[in-house]
Length: 256
Image (tube, rainbow, N blue to C red; front, side):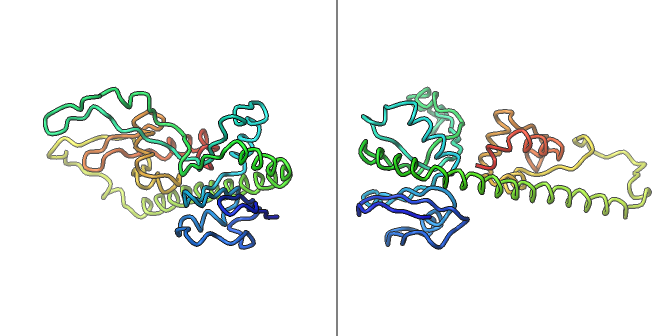
């Protein structure tokens, strides 16, 4: 079921299937990415003045609804809605042309964390109408959450299948290598880098498997949420067992 408010300057609707085609017409000013969000499973809010369309997951919307029930701050301040993203802060004390920036601690409070992007500020009256709409469609919202969980499980299952497939492929290639080729009686001319035996992935490969950016994976390594091995010439590489354990422990966040 899809619904949209009658006001021409803003609106909202529910998409109860993956990339549905039965939602209201998309605004003419919408860009290609906006059009994808318009049909995406979840909750969509748009604002004509800002020419912005934001998408919210069902689970995210349900948490927002529960917080609004517990707090009445929105009656005075309204509500900010947006898309969940992972923020990576940049150092503010880097040297520029031999000098240090004047305010090195200006961004000190900004930490790598989940945040809202593509935000839309709703007024108190708009918030009241939006929350009322969500209350009326509570059952539909729960159905959306169930479908999101199914889709996330499918994606993670695909990631596990890829990892297992790569592991089998590696073992098959190793079986074709003779012991004579594996054994080298001559010591290396130069001191090399020794790493534990196993399968490793580059930062780019990890980003693709987890559905995030390379910068996000780099931030995980920097914050030691994910551990890697520093390989000269290649940068950080992540061992397969370490990656699988990380995905299991952060399954909910990766599926958002």
